[in-house]
Each structure stands twice: as structure tokens, then as C-alpha cells.
Amino acid sequence: MKASVSQQHLAHGLSMVSRAVSPRSTLPVLANVLVATDEGRLRLSATNLELGITCWIPAQVQEEGSITVPARTFVDLISALPADPVQMSLNARTQTLNVRCGGSNTDIKGIDANEFPPMPVPDLSDGIELKVSDFREMIQQVAFAASAEEARPVLQGVMVTVNGAEISLAATDGFRISVRKSALDHASSHPISVIIPARALSELARIAADGDETLVMAVPSGRGQVIFHTRDAELVSQLIEGNFPDYKVIIPRSFKTHTILTTAAFLKSCKQAEIIARESNNVVRLSINPQGDQPGQVEISAQSEQTGSAEVQVDATIDGPQMAIAFNVRFLREVLDVVKTPSVALECNASNTPALIKPVGDENFLHVIMPMHLG
Image (cartoon, rainbow, N blue to C red; front, side, top):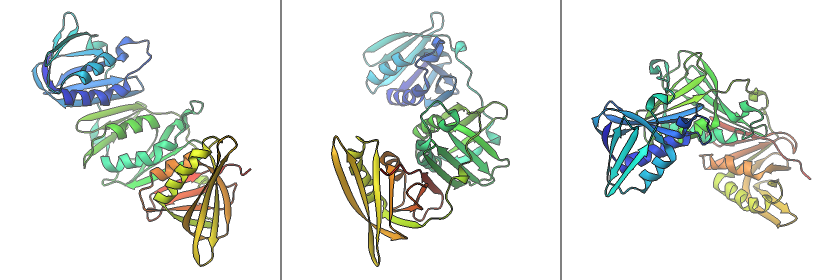
């Protein structure tokens, strides 16, 4: 292999794929990044056998070839180089990659590319076309609600369902449920229902390019994998096996108290209350007070024996009886962070039943949040 590539392109490509490198593995090659020439471009790949990321970057290729090199060494080297062209040449006999840039000349010992696990080649003709910008927003509005606990693997995933011209994403950790749906430009010829690890989707949102680019989601039958393919990047992930909870039965259908608040003001007040609440299990109390013909008020308060107490008042439009309800303030902040509309609705029935948060004017996103015990 002999190739020349810009330092910026190489550093950016390595930052994309290196998140899939296995930090602890019995297979030494999984700690490496595959560097290979591929039809006039340079292909970089990394995998931990559950998640694999590939990207293609522009290059001037003089000789074809491939090698795997230790990811950490390669990433640190390239990021430390000046913004000049990087010349790479491979000594196939010694499996050594020579890297030259500016006045720097480095030899890195690698492992034969044949030992690297093969990355699947997707059949894109049977895939589902998604707009990158829309799908990234869907992921951001749902993936955060997945569980971080390993005890129930299905809750670490996002349920992705495709029916005709509609796609929906849902995640829950047992205390909250986030659901986002969207219309597809091209209807799917077959229904899809899979559980994709939330981490894989978060990585996809990170690496997918900005702009009007499209990506293709392919679920090859019988492989237990999902593949996301864009022009310059590809992500493959193992699916999670198991039964996802029937979250639809938990979503309340009607409410007694409807409260509409300015999203930014509600978020800001939650952040202020969280400073005190984080010292006491993140509990904040919401007192929802209608004022007849006047605009109502929501008082957000937190108390901690060690730190003190905080109260923040937010104006609101309230329809229904007065209500006191407590929530985990971090859960409130995280959902308000992904609401895209100026106003948000909080709908409640009682202090001990699930509440609903949804953007005003957007029927495609909803978030169910379980209340905490009012002491």
C-alpha cells in the first residue's frame, strides 16, 4: 500500500471509527484499526464484534494494500501531526506501516489485515431510505431514555418499528418512555420490528454527516444485525434479542390537568432546581396552580438537608384542578433538552400516576415520565 491523504481527513475518519475499538479483548486485532485502499479512497474500519464502524476518506492511492494498526497509537500520532499531507506506505513483509508528514517519520508495527473480522456487505436494494437530519433528531429524542443497566438488555435498546410509510422509535428504562414517529418518503415493502442498542444509534447520530444526505437502513434476514449505510460511512450493529415491553398500554389516554409552559423557561427552572435537588435523589416538586382567568403558575421546588432549598416560579396556561407532583429533575431536564417547539405541554392525572410531556404543535413526539413519591 502506498497512499497520500490529508491529515484533517485522516484525523476526522479515525475519530469516527475509533469509538468502535474494543478496549478489552482477548483478540489483539480488535484493538486495531483496519487501514485499506478501496477504489481510489482510503477505508478505515474498527469493530468490537457487537458494533462496527467504517468510513471512507479521499486519498491519492499509488499502490493497493491493507493492514491493521493499533488504534490508540495511530489516533494519537495522526492528531499530533501538522495539517500537511500524510504519506503512508506498507512493508507487507514486516507488516509495518510507515507514516510521514512534515518532518515526522514514524514506523508502526501492525497485524495482517486478513485477521480482521470481515465487515458485512449490505444489500442496499432492500433497505429503508431515511433522511439523515430527521433520523438524527429522532435518535436524540429517544435514545437517552434507554436504560444504562445491564440487568435487562432489552431496555438498553431502542425499539425500531417500520410499517408502510411510518417509522417509530421507542425507548424506556422503566421510569420513562420516549416515543418518536416520522413519515418515510418511500414506504417499506415489508414491516420491520427490531431492538437496536441505544449506544449504536447514538454513535450513528454522531458520525452521520450534516445536510440533506440520506442513509439506508438494512436488516438482513437471519443475521441478527442492522446496517446503516451513507455515502462515506457505514455502521453495523448486533440486534438485541428479546421482547420489548408493550409501552403503548402505559401511555395515558386522558388527563385532568393540562399545563402549557414555555420550553426554555421550564428547562431553565429545572436546571436551577437541579443544583439543590442533586443532593437529595434529584427530587423536584411541581405545584401546578391555576389562577382562574389569570395565567397560572408552576412552582418548581427542591430541598436538601445538606445544601438548602430552592423555589422557581414559571408562568403557565393551566386547564384543570390544582396538582402537586414530584419528578426526577434529571429526567425532566433531559426530555426538555430535546423538545424542539417553543412551548411544551405537561399533562397529569394524579401525584402517583404517569405524566405526559409533549411538544405543543408536534404530534410526532411524546414522553411518559413516572412521578416520584411525594414526601
